[in-house]
Length: 301
Image (cartoon, rainbow, N blue to C red):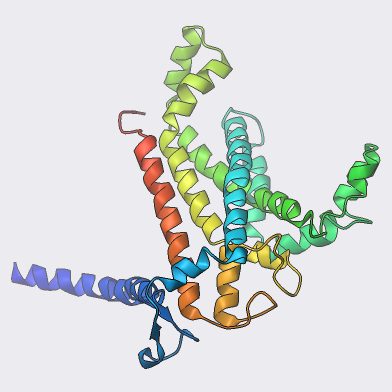
């Protein structure tokens, strides 16, 4: 028994040590940092200035942070509705027995294997370009001159352009999650429903959707996690300095740590740590709400 305990400890020790160093320590350090005024993340502890909850109260009194939170909320809500609806639609279609399922699945998922930098550059240069962009040519073709002349990358339209491009890149990822849930549902259920006279729409509403509650919860959680870490797209759709129309909390946090542009003049790693904690709490809140309102324990496949 003692030998077995020694083997267990020996096998678990590397994983536990790595977890403590790589995951637990940074989390604890970030929480502590959020209560201090720190110029750089590498500053020794003796240079930390304790400020209590001032970083948090200051954040919610700062107009640019409030705007960043509103932007990320709109991306999460509006973008979430678009992505979840489209990904579920494609998931249902591709699991309905159509030909070329593997091909269409690969095509829809393709944007997820392309670098976000390359994808955002493609949208900026070849889709939203005012003269030769795909949108301009398409709207000219159908006679929508006002839309064809629309400056998608102008400050007043940059958020719309950002949201469209980001949603395009995320549909394939969430589609695969929906498909994994749909394919778990036994075909016998649909055969029995067909015999009872239920059409495809009724089967989707009363069978598929209820049996996908757990998958929906997973999709919402993953969407929240990726949205809270939203950074690259916002950075690429901004100019050299932070664009207020597309700024998000992580981008503002980056500016606080490294100091750049007109939005930030002083660096404060503790202030940035508070932003990270707030985003983490938002993810936990969404996850808690999903667990409270979406129950799927009584469902069987």
